[in-house]
Amino acid sequence: MKYDPELIVERNEDVYPPSDDSLLLIRSFDVRSGERILEIGCGSGIVSMHCAMNGGIVTCGDKNEKAVALTKRNLSLNSLRATVVETDIYSNIEGRFDTIIFNLPYLPVEEEGDLALSWSGGKDGLGPLPGLISGAYDHILPGGRLIIVTSSLMDGNALRSVLEGLDARVLSELSLFFERLSVLEISL
Ligand SMILES: C[S@@+](CC[C@H](N)C(=O)[O-])C[C@H]1O[C@@H](n2cnc3c(N)ncnc32)[C@H](O)[C@@H]1O
Image (tube, helix red, strand yellow):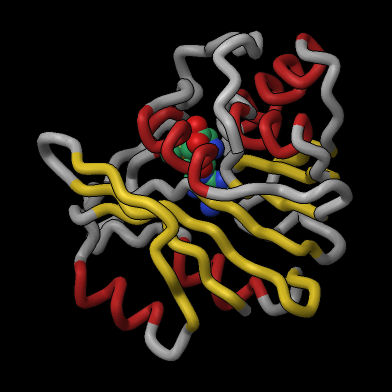
C-alpha cells in the first residue's frame, strides 16, 4: 500500500507511535477491496487505517486499552471504519479473516508497562509470535495469510523453530543501524 502522510494520527505517551517498522509494514503489502483483515497490536491504528482506506474490512485490537481508545479516535478523525477491541492476541476476536497482521513486540527484553508491550518480546524476542501462529488456524479463511514483522535482534534459532514447516517469504527488509527488520508473509 502507499503510505499516506496526510492521515491525521494523534499520539498518546503510552502508545507506540507510527515508526520505521510501521511504515515498512504498510508499504510491504496490498489489500484488495472487500479483503477481511485482522490486525493484532494496532497501536495508534496507522496500519489498520491504511487497510481500511484501501478497501479492507478491518477488525483490529490491542492488549493496551489506551491503544484501543487511540485507534478508535484516529479512525474517527479520518472518517474511517474498523471494529476495534481490547484483546490478548485472539482472546477477544471472533470470525475468520483473509489476512492477519501483527507488527510484533520483537526485542529480546523483559519490560513491563503499557508502552513496553510494544517492544518487550521476552527472553527470545518472539513475544506473542508462537501464540499468533498456533491460533491463526482458528481465525484464518482458506488461502489466507499471516503478515508479521521480525527483527535480527530476535533469537534466530527460536524464530527458525517457530517458522519450521511454514510457507514463509520475505516481502521487504530494512536495515537500521542496530538491527535489520523483515516483513514476512506466511501462507496458511
Ligand atoms: C510494535 S507495536 C505496533 C503498533 C502498530 N501496529 C504499528 O505498526 O505502528 C506492537 C503493538 O502490539 C501490542 N501488543 C503486544 N502484545 C500484544 C498481545 N499479546 N495482544 C495484543 N496486542 C499486543 C502493543 O500494545 C503494541 O501496540
